[in-house]
Amino acid sequence: MSGTYCHFGAGYPLNSLFGSKLMLYERTSGQMKQNGFNLIFKASRQFLLNMMGKAEGDPLVFKGVALDEETALKNLEGNALKMGLRDISAFRIALAVILDDEKTMIQMLERLKSYPLQDLSITRNIFRQSYAGMACLIVGTNTEHAEYLRLAKSIVKMFKAMNKAGMVSTVALSVCLKALEKPSIDMYNEAIESCALAGLKQFEALMCERCGTMILEQGNEKGSFDYFSRAFFLYNDIGMIAKTNQLVTKHKFLADVSLKRPGTASVCSSSRAGWDATASSFGV
Image 1 (cartoon, rainbow, N blue to C red):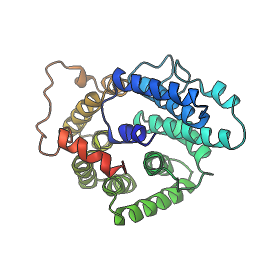
Image 2: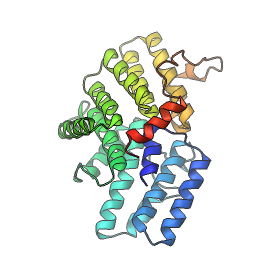
Image 3: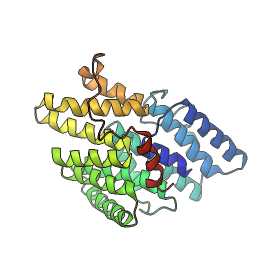
Image 4: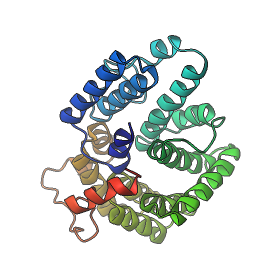
């Protein structure tokens, strides 16, 4: 299970091979009557399919070949239902942040706000709290939901404690949260480089995209080009086809077949060494 959250959190490739492994884990946990783990692996596979652009409908919703959220939750009760709702909501808030859907962010934050910050699984906790913290700062500054800003501060405090314990990934994630709290080109650049050095490829892409959006909103279309194109290639390297499709729809220049990869190899986290380092940074 920890390896699954590490895979998603670090931005390792999303492909059919990984999907086959998840199916194997899903089948084995089902045979062993481990319903909680079985649900996590089903949710993991549906998250994978949605991000790969293979959702049967809305990619923000879990209703597909791997998992139908409504049906799955109806079959649970008590603590199993509580934990199942937490795990599904963690994946869906990640989808909401990646696909930039504030309505779904708010829905998932409402589900998750009653759960304690701490979790027995370090990798699951970092995955859930990183996206929850980002969602809090995105919607908390754009709506009347001030309570989300308080939750974000609690998550930052928790990450700082992990930083002191030597958790590399939370150092970079703390910088990302700071960039979202007080956005500027300098802060986003720091977050981008921190994620690249930590091997957190999809968070690197997220920060590139958010910076590009900020620059574009300031009226500097040309200045946003490098950030959007770098985000596009990072998402594409991971296999997040649902996201690259969304970016091309929003920013037509990304569909240009003559587009060249930006010359940022010095800080790009696509190297094998960076990937190998990331597993340990996520507690695996």
